[in-house]
Image (tube, rainbow, N blue to C red; front, side, top):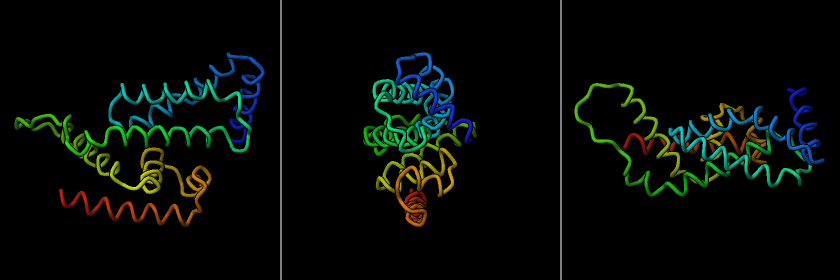
Length: 178
């Protein structure tokens, strides 16, 4: 991990010095993780790729000003979380109205059922308050420990755990009602 951090540091320094190939290396190293993170939330390959592309476009524009106050991966997680929160907020009306729900015609395809359960879960997650939603996304989509969530969000480990607990309580209540 330390070696990757150093490599990210070196690549960012090179990019800040005008070497655009260094940015390409950062993209190669981190793009698939971002796409995977977004796919776990959107369940849509195209949307997850679009979100990741937007994140790396923002990085391309703003990485010249990166001040190395945190690890690059922490910075990237924050940007991913902000993009995911924006996407969930933009698509909340769709989630509430289920406009993209496919009609059940009696097929016994359990994979469709499993996808629907995942969709229901993410629809419910999108209804959570922002702090709770952020912690849940990082725990579920990225499988991050509370220590890492604490570093990325700036909240204490205890606060992250409390937010996660409250989120799970709300999700269980909402999902059992539906």
